[in-house]
Image 1 (cartoon, one colour):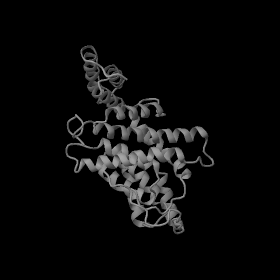
Image 2: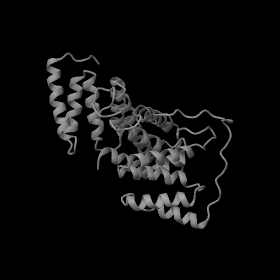
Image 3: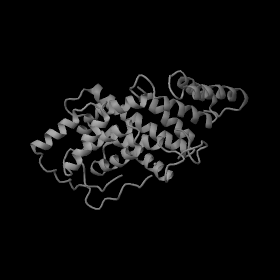
Image 4: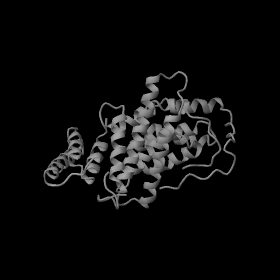
Length: 297
């Protein structure tokens, strides 16, 4: 299992910690791989509309959702207990649930899990659509904010329509997740260790998404700081190989050739599709360290 997928699984399993700890939603208005145009790489370049300004009092409490009937409760429990590994079945059950119960109080949780499932199925466009529906209902869901921020920044290719908008949206979502996650109080029934792991897994995803957004904008020093933070706080014992690759690229672009060689070498030591690319990157960075002037730290 890759580091990124482990993070999403961990965040999904512990999402209840963050849901339970999130403050009561206020009526504030709805918020919303390489390469990119203008970043020095080829092939690719999420945007965002900024969060809407509040149109009412910031202290206005969102009305309570309608009561749940027995049939709706059973349908949600059936969906919630389906294994995440059975993605097609879980997606079908989730989509059926939100169509049958369009006013359900469980919609945010269903949408949140559907985001995860769609991304695992490489259907990023559907994940983005569902994720934004969820954030319209629960704009402070840090797990969805983080996952969308990372996925949007990574999904940009040369064929992405309006890549600048998608990149800007990825940046907004990642920053909001980083801002909100530390403020969530620990709910009852959750151990300190579980809560720290849940928050760090979410923050690791968010810093990764912001780091790639910075990289695509040519802000290599900022990208390095975000990617290093993501790798450092990630509770996964196996680093996300994509983050190592991106860190190598950012170090190389910033003329930090020894650091680039180190990041690429760690990436090359991991089996997968980036192994050979990272090996070549490490070799090139080592040559550059011997022939070019490295930037001071």
